Length: 150
Image (cartoon, rainbow, N blue to C red; front, side, top):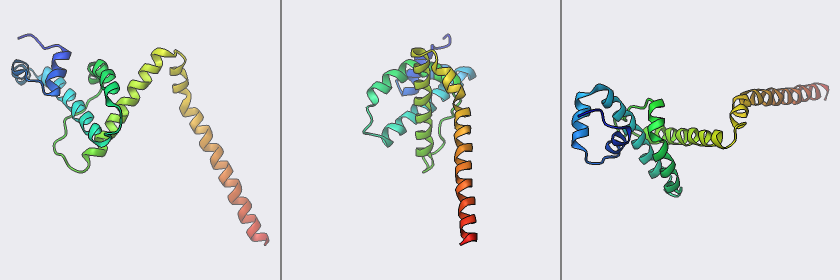
């Protein structure tokens, strides 16, 4: 058997019954690694769905199904070893991060200027932090001066 396509590996990661693909991934380290990364993403999304049942997941499922193969190339996630109490926040963080990455990718396609603004956002954040620090420092200094005078 030749290497399975990304779509076939994603179907196997979702749990579809594909014994020939699983047999291939037992022999092929590269495909096995890709399958483990995809399985990590699938597990994280299932945990996120359990954590947020009120969210409309159908629309997100469509977007994620189209983007999952590309995202799996960039994300290096190992499947969780246990289902400990730490897994839910971790999977939720992964799901939120994946959704944010997909949103940014979608926004970049729609508005060409969005990437430039997003790259400059840390500078704006730094300026705001400095301004808040100056404001708090000024009020602290004025409060100390008023207390010493009174």
